Amino acid sequence: MINTAHKLVGRAALLAATGHHPFARHVIRPGTRPRGWRSEDLVAWLLPSGTGPAGGAIGVAAPAVDLFAALVAEGVLPHGQWVQLPRTDPQTLAGRFDIARLDEWDFLWTDAPPPRQTDEERVVRLTDADHPALAALIDEAYPSTTSRPGDPGIVDWYGIRDGDRIIACGADRSRGDIGFLAGLTVAPDRRGRGLGAALTAGMTRALGSRYDRVALGVYTDNVGAIRLYRRLGFTGALARTSIQLG
Image (tube, rainbow, N blue to C red; front, side, top):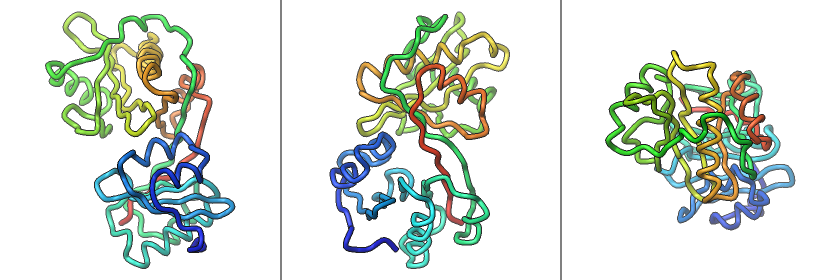
């Protein structure tokens, strides 16, 4: 375990230890009282229950794995909790944790407005009245997403309409002091027309007017989406391995 002489308490201390990293600013919400640990090559934290993933770390993977394996052994992290680790080989993790689910993804961010995209002006903020149409689009186009109408963690929905139909949508899951895009999707029969780029650019511009960084998460194997996001200015990157404890 990380030397207890380097314990940290509170959001301000953890953000300072990470150099105010965008990922830490996103996951460690204002108003919470996390606790954490710091070493030369790692900053790790535990968050209060009900605020999202139970723990996370930035830095070198090996000491992060050691720390969280010890916390699990001590009963601090029960089954069902999520932990967000530096990118780690799945075989290494399988030998240290009982894992219900493992996701490899990248946290990407930008601090600049995106290049203007064709049809970006069609991106609008949606209302509660649009929730049934949003749910229908999500069920058809992105059924595995956890971003759905009625989720209390969603600040706003944005979308592109074609008449009465919503043909693209995305959720504003901003928290803390980082803008965050989630659940971006386009109707299957409208893909390949640049609507994904228009939606991402429009939402990034809208959130960028309120935050100094805008971020999103993308599965590492979604090469096409990563290429698009980089073209739109999401050049900051942090490789993540998230595990749900079995």
